[in-house]
Length: 115
Length: 115
Image (cartoon, rainbow over all chains, first blue to last red; front, side, top):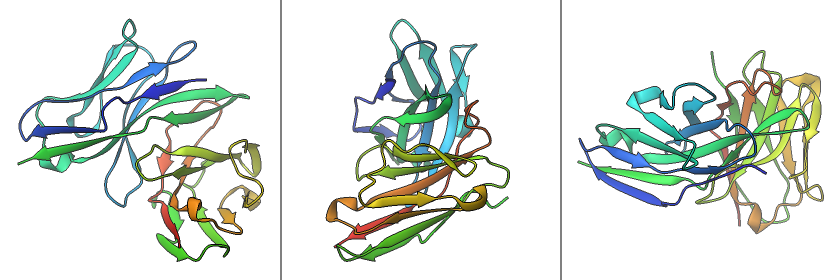
């Protein structure tokens, strides 16, 4: 079965500093990886995905993620954090069973950006 | 486009009572998913529909949970009777094609509290 791990429950960063939210994956075959963000009392919003191609994937709100096959990682990054980036971030991997796809999520990392 | 619409947003019930959640997916999306998100955890798939057919319900606790998607559009998830451990956020998502894994869109969720 496919899985992702988010080793940090929380990441703290000051506004204007770069941020990294870590994710490692375990898959058989080619990995299809995703990042979602969840604001309080809201559903999950899609940020970006890696299917194939360039290892650096650019997404919404200035976020990007770097796919590293040798380290089985897919860390989320942003060059300059904003207070409004404070939210819960989920890494996910797409699993295929019986011909249909489903997303398997990590446990989430809370990002707190201080002014 | 309204996105995935869920109701109610919040529900508080006493244990052993029944409860139902409703989801209206994005128009034209054939695949519908119900996820459960426990506090501090990532979402976990309960059931997935391809049109009106439940193609993966292996994670649905069938002794108390049931779901339907009549006419392949709206869906209802029911719990009867509810237990304290059912307190969670229930998320609905839809995608255009479950086989190819198109982009998921999540609703805002229903936060259930069982007292």
